Length: 538
Ligand code: ADP
Image (cartoon, rainbow, N blue to C red; front, top):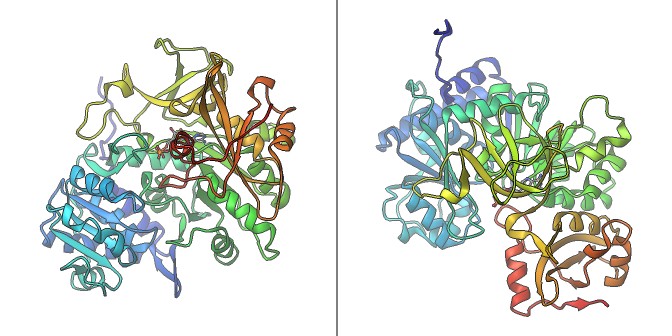
């Protein structure tokens, strides 16, 4: 039997129509070297129409790829609205990729037009001659270098076209955005989001069981718009009426603290390394004021316990942990304690990677492909499926990443009866010692709780007796001191005895990936090259 329901396509156009009407006067704040630039949702929607008219005149047709090489800012948001709504595909380019990877993703994605921020011209110039199919480069901001040859000026294009572009009626399953994984192993792989998947993901982000973005919120968007669509927040914000603060290149602890004090966001999203920097910087900044925030959302990597406790104890601020991947749009699990949890026990849930959000399904599977019980104890690989989870990669076969219609996440851990996931490691980072798993994530979280430690990353190193043993790489806080013996003693009551690392090294900084996560591949390579000064305890 057929339903009697209408079949309105779930497209970006409908998100724009909603936001520009109901939330016309809501604002987007872009932080610039010269001050804060403001624009309303209505102004941004009209500028998106002008941009679409300009792109159409440049020959951008349905399905064509338009790349962006930009910071988090207003123009980037305009491209987020205009490009998919006109039927083309927005390809967000990671501004921190190595030049050869950047050229690869532009060519592989088939970008014909690219919009770039003028401050990124020198980076982009390195690959201009390797991307012959790019017909037009549009520069936002003054292009004074001439390093890219002939370019078009973003503001001139906007000024010379009229608003009123008619968004076409599209198929909700059409491609809207493409984003490549960071390619920590091999070349990056393309994931293509549809209008429908972005729409449903936005609704999920508005639910109170997840991030609960709403009209009362003003969100400081630290996660880059080139990394998993800034966790989908651009569309969610336009849909929900959430104001946005765009930090551009000001991503260190001190400017973030200033932004929070002066622009008073209610929520902010970023990876744990950024929040660690903010927490440590705030300690020496009596003017730090987090009172406007209802929560900060941390994800993309394990959130250490001390970080959650630090914000809670010093500022009464809740850190909400989330889990997701480029392949999952990314919102898939959010660690909000179940109702009725006593305040002093909430931390036991908050340290978990997340609780499955409505709309996706998650399971743990053994090496043999068997589905494991949801008992919070049995370890295996997480597999996920749902309407905003990728079913394939763009242009490549990757059968090893899928299993009976589920995406294999490469994350190892346990799932419990209430839907909370605990991640012990990524499969490529696991430490298997004497046939048993040691969780690098747990070791790191515990070492980072030591007051002298700023950051710590644990990797596996070969061992003749146990196959692998953990090596703990530590960055001390400025002016602080601690020896390997002291740190091991600190760990002793916190983890199993046989987990205790005997190998330690003290370094100036943990290498980070292009999106600010610990880069364990680099650490392992440094160790293999003998470039780390390793202390081995008895
Ligand atoms: P990259 O490969 O560059 O890290 P993604 O952003 O897609 O690209 O990373 C997704 C991965 O990040 C997940 O598979 C998982 O390993 C890790 N991750 C994300 N959130 C969490 C979390 N809350 N706890 C632990 N790991 C996480």
